[in-house]
Length: 208
Image (cartoon, rainbow, N blue to C red; front, side):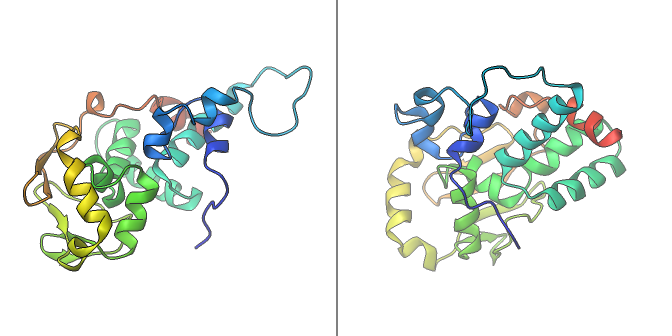
């Protein structure tokens, strides 16, 4: 399946906002948004005002790039959110947050969602004791996420185990720092999702 393999800092510069796609680099002086405030591409003397449709598209793209989801996957997630009871926008964020790669990132096992996706794809993560290498897998309440036994032998695991105490875990997750395993306690509330994403605008984009 095709994926974006270009420089991810261009995505942040396009949004003129930090999407936290490169972990610690985004909080350092090397962040491209702070070093180069202009968007990528050839600069024009005068830029036209962005239309309502353009604002909706930009917000949708921001959510896609933040979670590392392709367009077809994102459409499927939105279709599933519409079928569920409740507010469609919040349902969409719940589905994105409950993806396995995002949960691995939220637990502090990775510095970014892209790195979390790679960890899952390499087979280092287990769900309820069963190894799983599908980043888009929808984690459920009560599931236990842990490292596979062979994954604990890697140098990355040893470095991560030393730094895991400094990680902040959302309230809808619990982390066992000694065993380096986490459990999903509940669905995340909208206040638990610390992202500047306007889900209502995304709903408007797909409703036209």
